[in-house]
Image 1 (spheres, rainbow, N blue to C red):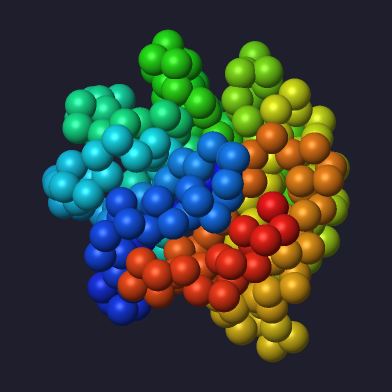
Image 2: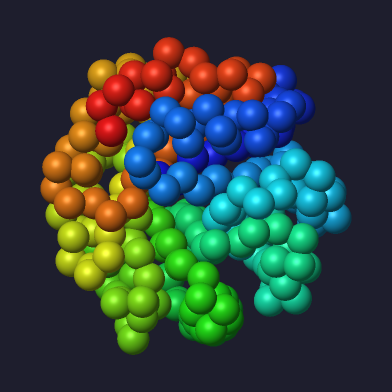
Length: 250
């Protein structure tokens, strides 16, 4: 199990005591390995990100997002190996995640994998050489996504875990799970985002769907299930009803 912890002051989102919240979550997912994806203010400031991790996550297994797309013309975060090494010196890094990379580039009408493939492979190679798990996650499906994904992951198919993100308003997660099952290691990124009939994005997908997507992934044999965003499941570090519902079914 992987859970998202975040501090985003612009949204009024805080995680005042990550250790406390982690121990509650670990107890809730009794008997399962629990890792954390930590996010400090969109991960825009590496120094502040490292200080937060050093001061609050000692000993907690962490999955580090090395890529963040965002709304800018260039990615908000595209870490170098040196950046990752800085985090590894002060935190218990167990894995890296590269989320929505192809989806983000396609939004900018960039369909040439040469733009990103060298960087992706360098991050894969570094992580694998340091015995870190590697998570690759996407939410888009379609005629461009699969060929570009296949080209990017060629040679690494059995070394990484493919997570299908459920924040896709166009296809049911079952379709994405079938795509993910083509990889030797696969899982689900169950997210609380949804888009209503007016194409207005929200972060309050009805809980029954979150439960359905999670149990469907589990029953289909997912090795890993990740949950986000943090504020769907926690408020100021305290579990919300949605967390207790998940703990009761997973």
